[in-house]
Amino acid sequence: MISEKEIDGTLLANITNNWRKIAFVVGRTMMQIDDKQRVGLDDLYFSTRVSVLVEKGLIEFDGDLNQMRECEVRLMPKSDKVN
Image (tube, rainbow, N blue to C red; front, side, top):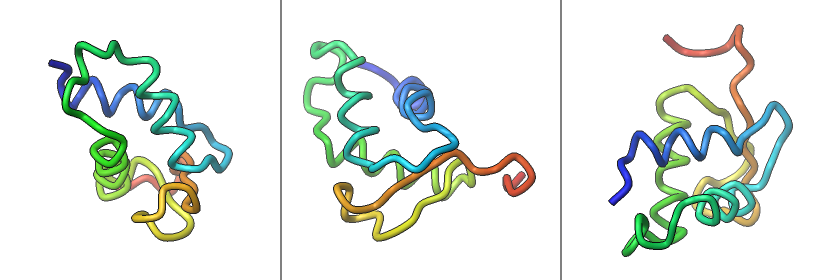
């Protein structure tokens, strides 16, 4: 089973300085992780991990985090990051 740290790292690797839909980021991330490693982990789990990254101040969002097809995320500008 893949760790949360590895999942978060893969999610962050798919988030850029430009706005991207959460659904796009989640879909790409899920495709990059072997099926055997993510058994039982669905898109909603990955979307929840995106919310955790927001809470940690690593990324910012625009929209409703519960609507992954509508909400967009991007990396937090370096000067705005929370320590």
